[in-house]
Image (cartoon, rainbow, N blue to C red; front, side, top):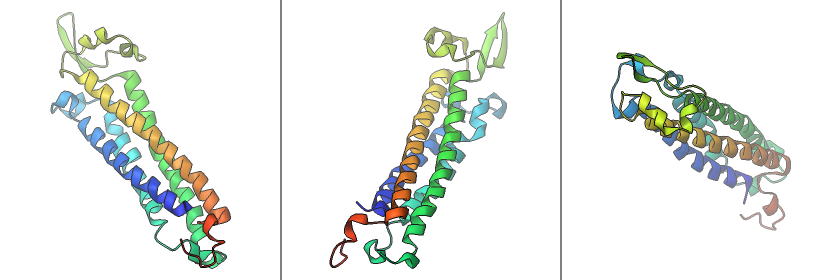
Length: 203
């Protein structure tokens, strides 16, 4: 497979992942499926890890990867001025942007999972909005989830969505890292190394 065609496959894969991340981040604004005032929403949600990091910043490299297959790869063999090698090389920069964006989302998600959600806690007949967990202690002890009285189900809600963002971000980072290698190969030996030796240049 040509490096441009492989990059297109990566771009096609990144697009739905970005959409999933954006949707997850939006759902986190409704903890437990409820509408709350902004001050009662977990702080990490406002960092827009899924919307900006794995969403908007990932759209740019995805579109660039998709466009690398537009031209005839074999028609440029031996012709440095056609720009195919430069296009593959430039895709590495966009892949780096993707790694940074996904890395941001992963970092935010990891912090949010470790910290736990903000929720209503009742202590000595006094209700207060706070972060009742510390250092991820609730992850290994689901009995602690009962500390959060409102919104109902907020712990599982936040944990599930931030976990999805974490996993999706790691996958996006891996795909962009693969494109870095693919881009280097395409820049060094041409977009279609295997088809350059053909007599008619057909793909």
